[in-house]
Length: 171
Image (cartoon, rainbow, N blue to C red; front, side, top):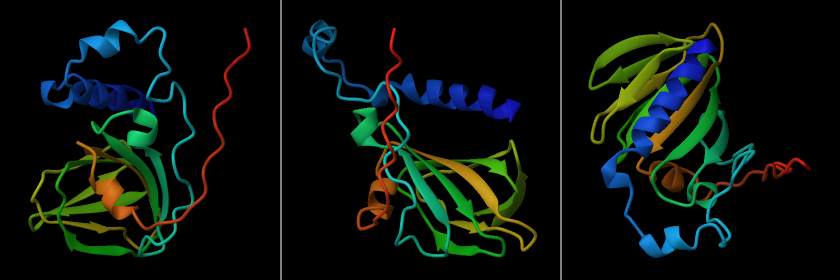
């Protein structure tokens, strides 16, 4: 798990500093200290136990426009059951897949890779990708899409539960 603590902030930092992700708005910055933010300071995610996602996978939408306040990034945590094969598909966003546990076979444009905990798979827009989990055990993944859009399309008609808000600590 140590790799997650190093890798995830680096990925998020790289995405956050990408010039294409941000449009400067001087008026918003001038009133930011007095205005209610358009993002969450802390969150338990957006949608848990997401239904209508094929294959029996367990999805949790962790981050999207509703709690990030912008379209720079979407993040989901997914547990894919052992023996699952997701058919070939493509994305319009960059998809970064971080393996939290288990074994995940990542096939991109016909080239297959076996990833284990702490490894990363990358899918560029237009790439053809298949997700495969061997029959040994489930795979738990953290998936990031930048810019946002792929999760919004995948979960548009999905139902799930809203996680409780993170309470603010009392001083």
